[in-house]
Image (cartoon, rainbow, N blue to C red; front, top):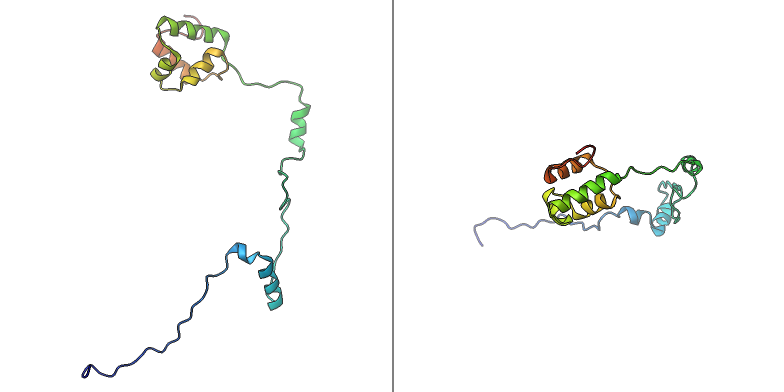
Length: 142
């Protein structure tokens, strides 16, 4: 190695550190006590219902009480009996099963079943698809 110049070493210190503590570790009781001993500033905030198993909505609020006191029964509009009978009759005339009809209108078979049983909430777009595929008016006059 002669002729390459003087050989020198880099003597700067290398400092190895652990990762900074995470938020959970900062809240640890040991970490808080160590910070108190060292004189660091500590801020503690008690959060409402913190650490309890109660849902925040478990107490009766003003709106809940108003709903409870309401005497009128409010329900969603359901498919009329006329519509469900017309749908079933038109489907049977075309000799289609509920699943086949659902596939033709790109909906789930469960939707056809709900319409025929009268449990569905009427959706005009679905009714229009059904009328188009079955070739008949399902609501109103035929």
